[in-house]
Image (cartoon, rainbow, N blue to C red):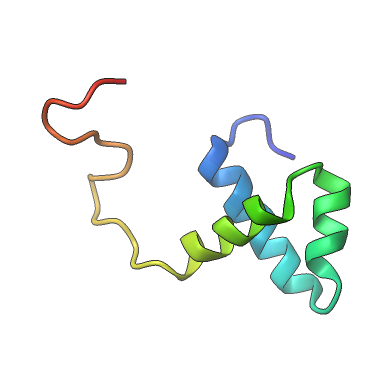
Length: 66
């Protein structure tokens, strides 16, 4: 899987692949990628969520620390 993806990107990619694969896709993608099924399910939640507004991706709230 792409080494340039961050954690969120990896789980969203895995979720998209699992959805595309259909029945049994979650188990197959989990086995192939080594990601936990719960991680892939969180990726599906990310895909279903309202998109972030443009320019706000990866921006921390004021006062938040990395």
